[in-house]
Length: 429
Ligand SMILES: *Cc1c(COP(=O)(O)O)cnc(C)c1O
Image (cartoon, rainbow, N blue to C red; front, side, top):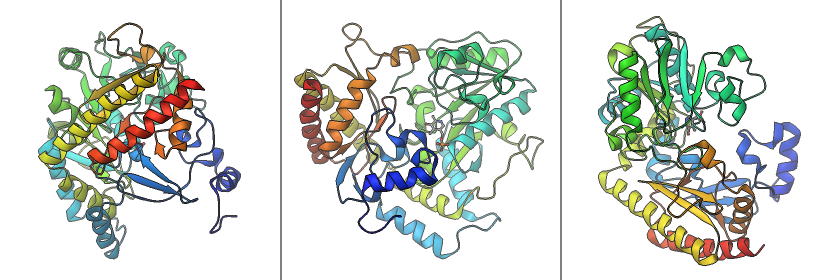
């Protein structure tokens, strides 16, 4: 069993007995990078500390749910205060209204918001809403985009079979994805009158980090408008991370439905979807599309989310962009110096890394096929050497790299020194 002097290895062994694979979300198991996951005891600012007392400079940041740094006092205080007043009521609260207003005021095209408990729920509901609103069955998604683990959207989260209309996971029957069409990212697909919605990560941040090609998002907007389909932006990562208006604002394209998660919960479980009132009022109880949640609009999650959004001033976004830039440039520099082949991408506050030689000078990945040319073994070597030197990258080659407000210029320099040493070691091995 677990106790005070438990090691990562002991905990992982215990975990694997009672939790499938030892984790509650697959990437955490270190399957693709090898080794034993570190079990976190606590975290503070840019650091996480494992149960063995080791400190890691953290670039995982809960896959984007953390933006102010770990255990930010404004957020932990808000959560503690909220908890003292009760943790869930099953009745509406003032903070739900406040958070919905914050999102509606910031996100282009959003007039009303429904709060849910995860990004998966947000996209799942967005699909049902689009089908209910349009009365059409089909959904177009893009290979390599991740929209959570709902049946209809798992197709081509991962493999070429999905482009054939097959499911991306065991347990998803062909019937569940029969109306899911998978298209290559950065190419505007042709739509017909059977398409309810096109769902897209407006910046693809689950196959490394791939920016939308010039005209791609505007092209989707036009194609959807012409076909009478709804455009769904999955801004679960980009929402309030690229800026208050997310990718929609950055690229000047207004979707019909926007999905949120991660940042808007300040590290607590939350998701949200928003659209103009005409669409949102199709949702129950205003309309016929059913959706509900025992913990939706949870008092702790809304308190944490509001506290996080309060910290995200224009100055804060400026700092985040500067730090992402410092990190991306520094990363390119130290990898090149070490002779470690890689391509580093950046969109505003987000950074991506592809290991392996670029196809040609100036090459950057544009779609899932490109992304999958990444050298997963080289990434695994780099990841292990980084961990050894106290820096934590995500244990998977297709995750974006996250910096937070706690990643000061000094912290980033410290990280770059570790990365320089790690990449030299990873090149030699
Ligand atoms: C993380 C993520 C989701 C799923 O959110 P969960 O809270 O993990 O269910 C959906 N879409 C995108 C773009 C994501 O990055």
